[in-house]
Amino acid sequence: MATKLYVGNLSYNVTEDQLRELFSEVGKVDSVNLITDQHSGQSKGFAFVEMSNEDEAKAAIENLNGKEVDSRTLNVNVARPREERGGSRGGYGRGGGGGGGRQRQQRY
Image (cartoon, rainbow, N blue to C red; front, top):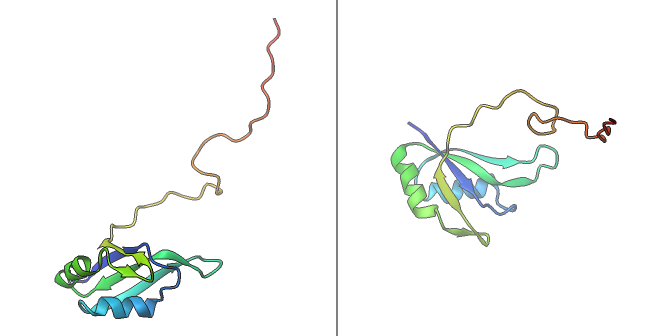
């Protein structure tokens, strides 16, 4: 069964092909997904690499976690499942009131 790995602290210059080549040195790579910004296409500095089995994933963690690539020290570990996100709230954070404004002074 394939195991998905999180690869963080990547240089913005690293490509999917470079990651595939690097991880292929320790095992069979099923897929590479370099995460990029939707608007600019610029790398966000992390990726997910899917190794064909758990043993190869462990070998990748042991051999590549802490390895320096393009002047950055890689952070490689088993990817956690994606957390469920709630519905959109308009882009202004969670809950919270809006409006500010000044408070009226109470007269006695």
